[in-house]
Amino acid sequence: MPTAARPARVDAVRNRALLLAAAEAEFAERGLDVSIADIARRAGVAKGTVFRHFATKDALVAAVAGDRLARLVAVARSLADAPDSGAALREFLSATAEILQHQGLTFLRTVSECDPVVAEIHDRLLASAGVLVDRARRDGLVRPDVTGADVLLLTCATVHTVGALSEPGSDLWRRYLTIVVDGLRPEGASPLPRPAPERLRPSPLPQGAS
Amino acid sequence: MPTAARPARVDAVRNRALLLAAAEAEFAERGLDVSIADIARRAGVAKGTVFRHFATKDALVAAVAGDRLARLVAVARSLADAPDSGAALREFLSATAEILQHQGLTFLRTVSECDPVVAEIHDRLLASAGVLVDRARRDGLVRPDVTGADVLLLTCATVHTVGALSEPGSDLWRRYLTIVVDGLRPEGASPLPRPAPERLRPSPLPQGAS
DNA sequence: GTCGAAAATGACCGGGCGGTCAACTTGCTA
DNA sequence: TAGCAAGTTGACCGCCCGGTCATTTTCGAC
Image (cartoon, rainbow over all chains, first blue to last red; front, side):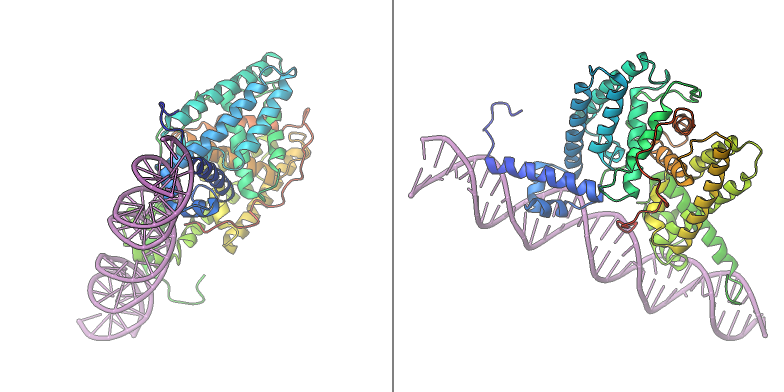
């Protein structure tokens, strides 16, 4: 949103897109510890160009994470009035698993607290997930004591860990997501020992992302 | 197990124990990325002493992880013939969550593949968990299609992610472990889409631990 | 084609890391 | 108590990382 500024050069736009794609791929394949130099090489630009577009490495991570979260919000909203509320919730969780891949909450953890834009998308995602869970609960398909934050956290936990332990292309996470979803059903549910968290962000913000 | 070697000096034994304790605490509080210098400072020794006891940082991580896994194996074995097989399984999973804290599989991931000793303890843990799961399944308390590796993986995933997102002392993981355990019950279980993995170790070994 | 500004470049910097080693200290044995 | 091997120390090394900046290249308006 430039305030009536110059229209931005085409090579700059192209390089920014290349960088985002390269960073997303590198983060997904090798984790957040990949060096800026590797990302630049993959994008076919020099290292300095990275810092022209993203002031710091954290900002780059935030941009990638924001992209993914925004995609997830779009999925959740498109499912908000699907006929079968249970199928809608399952589909949303599958999309969460696929989009976040095995990075999952590592992204959010290192990012959401610092970057207000990402934090806001994050809040929108929580709200949208809450809508899906509320509908499924009203239809008696989900136990009364779980929230949108709960299902997001469980999904991220599962896909993140499984992804770290299996081959990149594997969909082993589907196995565990099935078990988790079975645990969300209301029939014979055990009482939950602790209240649900109201957000997924960490409180103490542990360290920088580098 | 020294082959009739000298009995080892007392200060060396003491420092080794101090180092293991310091490393365990640092890893638990700040993750595997803590520097060797920080661990040495916490243990009250010089950096060089660390490398006298552990040839490399990975070896130190392996030693700590091996300790924890061995503790877990002991718990599993002590529960192997408890009267209530369902309670035994739940107790084992709680112990897993508590002992691995929020490090969980990050440990195993960076270690088991490389270090044969840890890998062997790891296999023993899988076997012991399998015994507990088999008993609970025979008693009709667990769905027929889950294995010891499954429940370990789900538990580690949950406790790892939750631990990363809540205060250190929190036991919010109990909430999610309850949901997961509910998903393990046989009543109305959905068919699982993928076969269980036979081990928890990653296949491609992604990177060193540093 | 000209030209100025925006963008790209890559050599460079400071710092922190894992790991090494020669010099020094300490616990054990005789 | 003498002596020596085992253990400890901390300065040091090379490496790689995130980030900077003077220089060069490229875009696009006229």
